[in-house]
Image 1 (cartoon, rainbow over the protein chains, first blue to last red):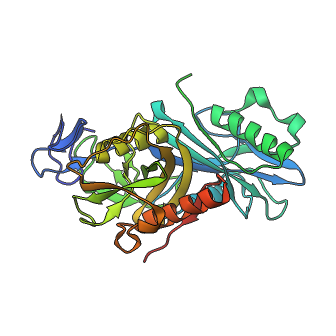
Image 2 (image 1 turned 135 degrees about the vertical axis):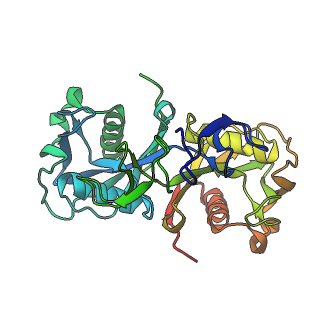
Length: 177
Length: 177
């Protein structure tokens, strides 16, 4: 971040009055440009006792498996974002979303909010973002070919909840690898 | 957002290739400037069966009561942010945070994540952000002078959880007033 998005002047890095952190500040128009964590939303969606996973067709982690998830957009709720991402990545419609995991990843400035959501029907397909989309029984999950640690811990919590008949979401922090 | 923060050129609004939404795009350097929802973190903190509330010394809602909360910063986890905001707003130290509410407010592009957190000791004080800080028994909560609806629904859920001995977080969306 080098230039002010409001007036185009060069930015400096300084601690604004009443603040305790360095920010990008415009000395021309006075605007302070804050940078904050982003939210990733997605779904562990399932049909007839199987979980739907997508093989990533794009970087990062091209070729590895993930649940459908992506950045939450302005103007939507967590659940609306999770439904949208699920449709965009594998053309599956979901309903009755229940929060399953909330994962803070401080070193990449992200919080992941993943929902447990049954598919509305058994329909899904590959997309430009997913080269392969497939339903997996628990024993067939490709644990060694998952794209991200958030996918692994969320899927494990999903199966654990199912075994125990509980609904408590997993609230954890993941540090750097 | 008018100018590119990377190169200073004027931005246009356009739908990038492979995207479905209008973004601020730089025709000079090609950067796409995404805007995403922000996370607010805070605590319902308590001591000897009373809840700690702060009377706001700043706008918006100056003079009204809130639990300590504010914008999550880059480089921190949800819990670290909630602990920091609680100390900044009322000088209270908290521990053993448990998620109590996750509230999407789509029309202002925010998600609020509030924790139930006992105070470590009974110490607190007013700050530049809080003109008065006070412990309240449930029957004395100033329900008609609360700053935000997120405060009201979270406090109600807190007391309901306490009556029922449950720990399930409240996951809701709040629409425009």
